[in-house]
Image (cartoon, rainbow, N blue to C red; front, side):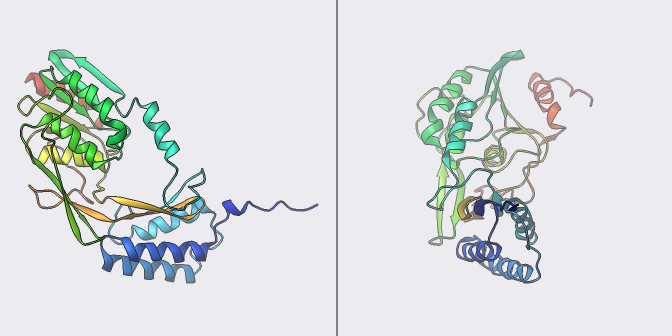
Length: 308
């Protein structure tokens, strides 16, 4: 009886994966000196057999732990995908992202009027590419513009598009406002993000109260939105410290099921001069994430905070 062999797509050619990952790391990581040290670490670990006989999922986990061992950069990963990546080897299939977009009503799963004329707007699971998300975001932001208070729920916002962040901020601020600067290693260049001079719908404006809810799951673009509004003094952040990922990333397929996720830039806030990488966005009013909405409602009403 012949013993079945594993599908080639499900067995990593470990030396080839490590070689390509280290090449991409040294070519693109926003911190070149760190990239060189991590590339040397991965080669040394390969020689010692640390990655031997790993299937793609296990290999991804082991390499990710090593990639994050120096500075804890959570965007720096060898990410396993159960479904095969695109044949051109550049990015993960957009099909899953499109399905996620549709299932979440364009990233706006909840708009609700609460007590005291407070509007709750939940953005999750991502701030999707603005080319997709402008219409649902505009509809939701126009709807809540008449509320007296906005509670912006980012507790399940785990990533997204900086242009979408700027789009949301444009509805919550008056006048052109510098939100963030991205430094990109490629070309050694800087890119500024500002609020838009015009929005397609109504603005909530820059005066009425805004409370932002966060959790330990809030990540990346969700963190940027909370951080930008907090640093500008435009919102009170309520909840938990966020995960701490401030470096925009690109992804490259190094195996049919493995994507090298490599930060290619870093955020520089014009107020703080830094970002939330590694520290997370620290709330102004700390509390467990599941209590954040009640806490924000009490703050909005000027009432004492509920006891845990």
